[in-house]
Length: 363
Ligand SMILES: *Cc1c(COP(=O)(O)O)cnc(C)c1O
Image (cartoon, rainbow, N blue to C red; front, side, top):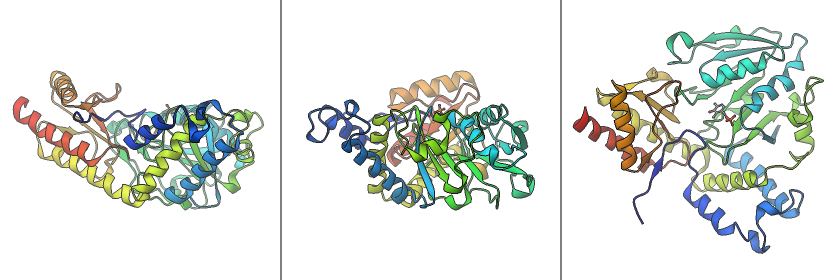
């Protein structure tokens, strides 16, 4: 074996190696059928078994309570930026929702929602370049709001809520694309949680949506049926042809997560991975953290170097050593290390070592 390449890309992101090996082994001959999973009917009993098992694992491994429906939806995470207001604004006559603006995706989410109703931005950290999470509490949300919206982990800037805010009677909607099932969370505080699959769950192009049952059936009249949560819930997400391959990969990822000990165990490991990198970051003067310490993400570690030349050199030298895709997002620059569930601790240790070595020789 050659030295492994550690992929720090933000998404589509690395998947666990055993999952990809299993896909490869089964690809041409799924469970002795002589055909591939991607060429059999989504209504076959074989695919039914795959999606049923995936549901079971979401509940068991992800600790999702039984009063939440599990939906597999088309269009990745950003399709939910429209689906959420279309499905939930109708809960109350004011057709109002309250958002907090904490970065690029949260901004896209509230801009899309504005097409459908009365959207209030209760707080924003734009003035400090999204280096923190602004306060967002029940007191900041009007009583006639249908829902309150947060992005649990801000993938580009690298901020993350330690716990979900308690919105009491107002359904909390969470875009958890970049930290779903990376730690235990209190789902009972939420009305809807959604996540594009491509960071912690599988391939790109689909999302998993968890909806509290009492929130179903309030979609605005003009909601396309393929965005209507009730239509998905009533058809086991198979109103039209589901992305069978994505669900199959997600099932394998969750089986892997179960073997790792579920969200408790992976949460501890993710904490240790992040600590390994933040320690190096704080020790070495050459690197400046982007985010205030108390809001730092365990999934995306962001920092800058003093010049663009040094940043480019860092990315290139790192790549030579098998540390792939460390370049920060184009809106922010600098360096970003995305360390989702599939990233082993060894990858973070190798990166921390490289950070020290680079500072010693180039700084
Ligand atoms: C990656 C990401 C998205 C975008 O997902 P798409 O599937 O490309 O639409 C949205 N929100 C967050 C928090 C993300 O990290």
